[in-house]
Amino acid sequence: MRKLVLLALVGLGAQLIDGSLGMAYGVTSTSLLLAVGTSPAAASATVHLAEIGTTLISGASHWRFGNVDWGVVLKIGIPGAVGAFAGATVLSNLSTAAAEPLMSGILLVLGAYVLARFTLRGLPERQLGKPLGKRFLVPLGVVAGFVDSTGGGGWGPVSTPAILTSGRLEPRKTIGSIDTSEFLVAIAASVGFIVGIGSEGVKYSWVVALLLGGIIAAPIAAWLVRHLPPRVLGSLAGGIIILTNVRTLLQSDWVSASDGVLVAVTAVVAALWAAAVGWSFSEHRKNRDEEQRIVAESETAHAT
Image (cartoon, rainbow, N blue to C red; front, side, top):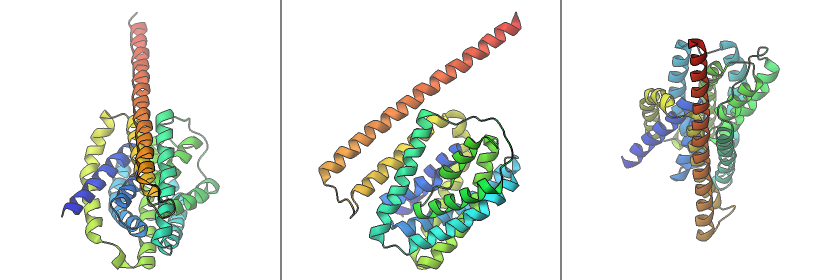
């Protein structure tokens, strides 16, 4: 029972992050599942099965608020499903000794990306350009889907920034379309894992616990995004992902670091993480104060 409660809290925390940033549910929850001793394939399978429910709810909510471009959903979602199935097949056929450091390495890179992007840049703002085409979305979907399955997450961190940076789709529709298309990716990955490791390799009580945590977190995330700056939340999420996967990687058979090295590296990562969060908060305050100053000057000018 204690482990189920812990898993529900993992799902709650991951959905809080994903609901506020539009990414990192799988990366966060898989990292934490690995940290409590779950095998890589079972961790990714568990997360993707839970994501069938969370992405369905998330996609329906985005659709109701007009945040979904269905052309983008189909163009990136179907190739993403193909990549996800392939990735699940590859991971299912790797031994635990080989898969654990591989997955932790992928998650570590994704965590570093999330931390760097939100600490240094925050959420990008782009001007709209020409519509997104298949030449851009199809390969992006295949790569993002493959990374999502083999890394236990990565659909949002890979595809969302790529589309935002292209400047061809407004941010709210980018996040809404990626969240909605992830439903197809979650189904394909789940099928791939069930074919690869069998249904006995997945604990469905864990899936339900993650799902319940995510459902509870959905309305809280809507409130949180209005009060906690995305830049700061992104730095917090990136640090959690890096810290958990650095420890997993150092303790793996590939590295087998000593206790002294493990403590030293953990301390350095924690210090850098704290500095990144502090920097993000400072930059957020500067930007907020600047925006308030511009608004005040504009109102004064109109009054005179």
